[in-house]
Length: 125
Image 1 (tube, helix red, strand yellow):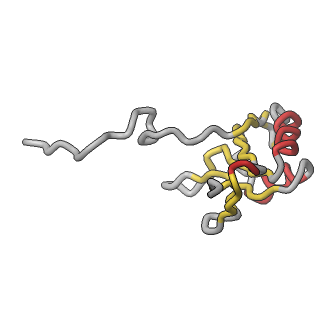
Image 2: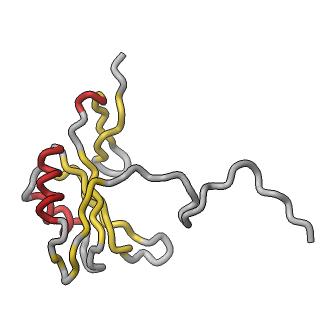
Image 3: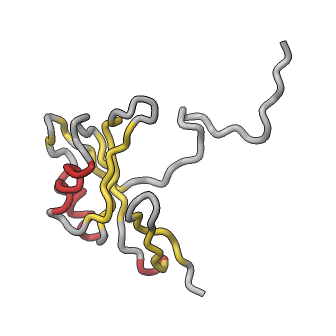
């Protein structure tokens, strides 16, 4: 049996399953975004380099405001590499973009510390 993996997210519900040997999608991190940039504007910025599978600006859960970075998935690795080389350092909205291949998420609780293991200790007062 051929191992499959979720390669490209069409949206938060639907995913495309592709054999690992045929990986075609690259996830790109885009940092230092202006807070006014929308998902559609991010998509338009990358569409000149190839087929954009998804583009999203990450929003703060508490305030609902943009956090200044996002992710773009481009269908072909070669197109994604061209986009990274062309857009890294480019000024958009008065800010120099930081564009590179996204790294996998690290385990943790979001504040730089490893996630706790096991049940929480009971507190005695």
